[in-house]
Amino acid sequence: MFEFNLENTNNKARAWEFFTEHWSFKTPIFMPVWTKATVKWLHNEELDEMWAEIILNNTYHLYLKPWADVVKYFWWVHSFQNYNKPILTDSGWFQVFSLWQEWSKAPSFISESSKKEKIKMVKIKEHWVYFRSFIDGSKHLFNAENVMDTQSDLWADIIMAFDECAPWDSTEKYAQAAMDRTHRWAVRCVKRWKENNKKREEKWEYLQALFPIIQWVTYDNLRIESAKFISALDTPWIAIWWLSVWETKENMYRTLDVLSPYLPENKPRYLMWVGTPEDLIEAIYRGIDMFDCVLPTRIWRHKMAFTSLGNVRVKNKKYKFSKEKLDPNCDCKTCNNYTLWYLRHIVMEEESLWWQLLSYHNLYYLINLAKKSRIAILENKFDEFREDFWKKYKLNK
Image (tube, rainbow, N blue to C red; front, side, top):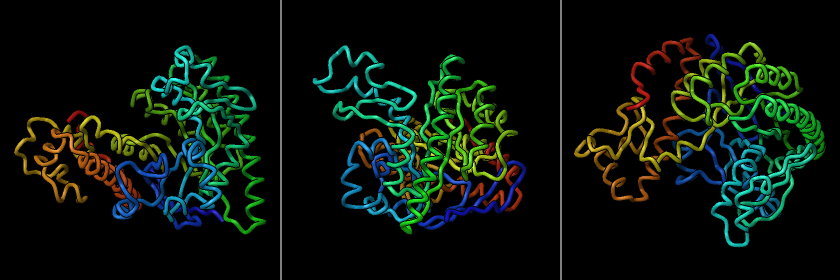
């Protein structure tokens, strides 16, 4: 059985422990993202070094490739990627919505007119969503039921309900329609999830936990309505989506404050796609327990690193000849073994080692920031911890 215990609260900040078939994990927690069954630039042993306790796999990518072979030859995704800790799989909708843009780089079999017409890439109906693979243009259908079945077949410990994440600039009318549709899908997901768990139990297979997702954009009335509906569903957890992806941070924090009175105290909360130090601190302060984001392994493109003092642009000329650590308050192997001068050198020379060293540091920093937050919550000192964080941290370093 999937179990979890609330160990302490410090104002709105909370500390939980979760027990799964693949060991336990403790919150607040940041989850590295294994989009295609791998964390960019890192290997499993390095995640063990930084005490990562749970990871996220992307259902859309695993479904497209190498879905059939994983199920046939490895039985479950843990075995396929040699990862024996808890795994959360998303529903795949965000990739369905967003990866139509990849068709602008698609091969010649896709016509120029098709590349320009998003409507031909994704079609949303009540009972299914039609989309084309960004890999080869093949046609596919997702719905509430087969997304639940796919995640069940992957044997994830935690799965996500199928939802329609409306674009950030949606009109209120469209956002309302998308929310209502997602609520209907959520009911269908819960039904199928329970059916699948019953089958799993009969086969002596471990049960999965389900997250339904609160939407919609930054319309307070819709967010509140969605929070009430999703919270009332018979599921152990709830998730919150589409904050801070394109909206301002101020809007994200404000929306979390608006939602707070409507979120059940007895259900853990997962804020999706949030992955900067300041957002972790402010969301934990507002009662969020779990986070994920690809940002830590992507910002190398901008020659940026997270640090306890704020983001550092490593190619900055002032770091030439610097023998200081990347982050004076970090004990990861990047910070312990390489100076800022050396890091700047491999950035300027465009050496791929930079991608690895930065990705390791950024993930290490976020994972351990969450762990330090947990210690502060258990000691009833999170307000002081947050205050100390902001004394050191500068948003535009």
